[in-house]
Image 1 (tube, rainbow over the protein chains, first blue to last red):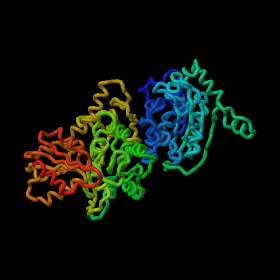
Image 2 (cartoon, rainbow over the protein chains, first blue to last red; image 1 turned 45 degrees about the horizontal axis):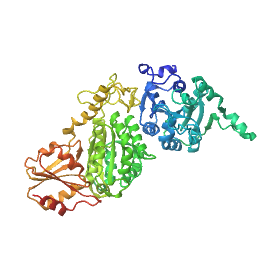
Image 3 (tube, rainbow over the protein chains, first blue to last red; image 1 turned 180 degrees about the horizontal axis):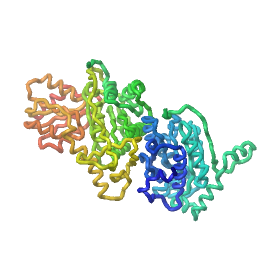
Image 4 (cartoon, rainbow over the protein chains, first blue to last red; image 1 turned 30 degrees about the vertical axis):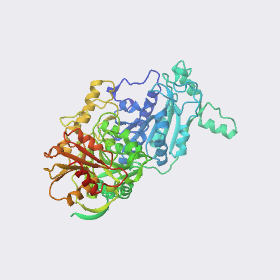
Length: 262
Length: 366
């Protein structure tokens, strides 16, 4: 099979803007799901509200498009009631880290056997570009017209601290790495969290001096700091540039998990 | 072989759910409903079921809805503050036609109010609490026996009508202990399956679509957005939205006579008490103390959809008296259906009406 067979063809075209990074992340996820050899009838995609959360509507499996921020809580019910199902959650930075923050950390703590893919575009895209909990300091959004004054969350650090078994971060540039990371997440028993940094040309790019989509993807590429390089910098006692984010596998462990397929 | 027990109402509720085949409980502790969760935590794992204490009531009802889509009979239990938190996802359950049972052991509100005192202040909230138009079913137990029976019945109604069903109990019935007779088994309605090849949200004359359980190969997309018969989002088509919401309301309202569950005492009386939940007990005492048939009584077990046909059975009624542990929420609903006066007998604070209070109200204005 190919990842394309997981798409609900009669739902295309999708709602995403030209240049949006979400499609790349969905492709990578479905490619990884396809490699798992999972049966479609045993796989469920769950999401909340936002651009990223529209993804399950384009996938042929059973899918639950729920309320804002609550996808992981719904997914917990699905997985606990039927551990035989493979449960994957699509979410975004606003859905996961603002309104859904509590469900996120508690699912990490429970280490429930689901995989959560967060498309982090650092802004609320669907509602027209408001600041999110991952908006970088100083960036312009429609609710931070003088520059974002708040400190953003590091979602991966949050997941690691809260107890997730597998955590990694990549970007829409790193498609092969991302696909591999999602597959590892799907294979790992317990809670897996994959953060995918994505460009949002419509809401974020145009306000923050990314004239072209490729400029933003290039920004994501050059500001990615490989985990191995980061570790080396720390070891050498060198400074880690403040505007860079770490990419790679950030946690893989084997803590007791809930809802694992018998 | 039936057996007799001496149980607390909340225990009876949990046992009623277990007897009905409830396999999933997701919830959050809150007085005065917590014993239901505790009993489910004790019993569900032994029955191959799942108990999960979620991080809040929002997650509790969310997990219940998720579990229900795997085919499980699923429930949660809460009280006022938690009930308020559940409202958004209750609307989601109504929109997605997810069978689920929500128990509200009511306490004094608003806000934190009186955690350990009984009330019936959430009767309108359970009907209208989430945004938008929809209908639901609500049952009110007045005895420990009814805590068992109506909980079991709530699952049947939820599966039959694919809707959230509320057991609107109160602290008094939830915490009292009395004799209960446990049946061998309880009737089980079946959640009608979707015929393969049928659009998942297409309904026939009963306006209730078949259920496409997750994991069975239906490939159903479930969304809280306005959706077409395929389940696909279609949120800007005015006609589609109107017909979907109308169907969600109609499927309950057109079945109101079948859903109605009530008892009539002395239908020829001119003075008629109407009660549900704990105040039923005071009315029964008044009837016991005043034999002779001149006091009528409508004992409601279904409150929503409101069984207005029951009112018509009191053909000589000159007025209806409605003792409630709120400021007249159901009395107001009754006024919509009646030409004769409705006398609200509200009581706040957590104490039941005393029999003399009801007698006095009945005699005042005769």
